Image 1 (cartoon, one colour):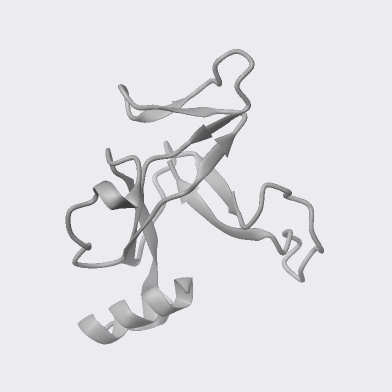
Image 2: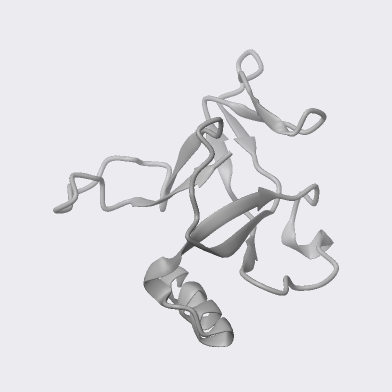
Length: 121
């Protein structure tokens, strides 16, 4: 899926796919149904949650969890294909997993096979 999004972008704009990576934008909409129209580039994805932290909607940044609350939902995230993307060192590289169980077979990269991508928040 992720490679497919990058591939579509590369073909649309005639750029080499190996120069593309994702940048991220967290929207104010809480669920996908609230988004009025599809993005020009990339994809909107919802259904993510944070484990051990929360999204402070007022300040639009990560914050400590509230007492006795282990999980918090995230608003819709826009995955934006970006040429020659460079991470902002001020952003937190939040690991995104397929399941809530981070454990899995270690792949040749040394990461769990449940790991998908690091989302910059």
